Length: 307
Ligand code: CAA
Ligand code: NAD
Image (cartoon, rainbow, N blue to C red):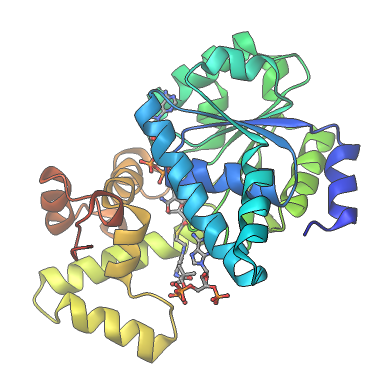
């Protein structure tokens, strides 16, 4: 089911195809809601077939969950899944994909240099009208946008989704000084066509949600590191005492421990107003898990083990 008004809105802004670069937890989710809810064509890009297949399997599992609930008939659910999947093309060629897209959403690793390198490539390959957006959790949008030409910077913004993308209703839309009003409007329309609720915020570390959520996660880490409570009791306490759907350790496993560490360490090193702050001091407990390759759910183990 697609809301006709939302569809019309995306189409009115001439968004017919989007490229999503990075087929991990977030890229897969963004590709899914674009193809399903907004009904636009999607090119999902990653560095290898193996990464693309992983992304595709995340999308398939999620669509299966959604259509199983909506349709009692298995054949009908399969047909609806196929319809969405037919709008998604997998690609290892960033340039080829960029050349035919109207909006490019970057969802690769949380690393400024990697994102800048990618956007430089995209700038050379994408059509002049294409809008560029980053799903970064914590990096300044202006610092990423500095990698592209001045004309493209006018078409650059932050488009920050939440995990799991098909379930979480929010998208933070972040303008930089150069972002043209019609680019911002197009991104708002696309967000709504994807079935999401947009909020806007200045280009400050963590925007709204992560500026509050990440220090909370690190306070939970420090609490356990001091030996004040176990991680299990902290998780139970925050679920039953504060009504959160997941405790902070479950949530860090869900977000990815590597990503959680990249976010916080980046702020500790150079985050505006957060550099060297007590609030962003790295956690030895988290560092050890990441060093051991325990990245949370996506790698099978983090604070907890997953079957
Ligand atoms: N795709 C489709 N449907 C999904 C899904 C997915 N990936 N994940 C969950 N669902 C659906 C389920 O099918 C189920 O639907 P019904 O209620 O209609 O049956 C519903 O969502 C609830 O799922 P579950 O019963 O399996 O589990 P739950 O009730 O514990 O909900 C959850 C799961 C939505 C993930 C919930 O635990 C939650 O909200 N957790 C917190 C998530 C959160 O805070 N995310 C933000 C992380 S921070 C971030 O993203 C920003 C950043 O930059 C790091
Ligand atoms: P992930 O580790 O699940 O996936 C990242 C993907 O990007 C991998 O498949 C990797 O192969 C691919 N990749 C890396 N470099 C690439 C390149 N140059 N070209 C193409 N693909 C490349 O990470 P994720 O959790 O999906 O996070 C992606 C981005 O979204 C990060 O910036 C992260 O901070 C942000 N984010 C994450 C969450 C979360 O909860 N995990 C929420 C919101 C935003």
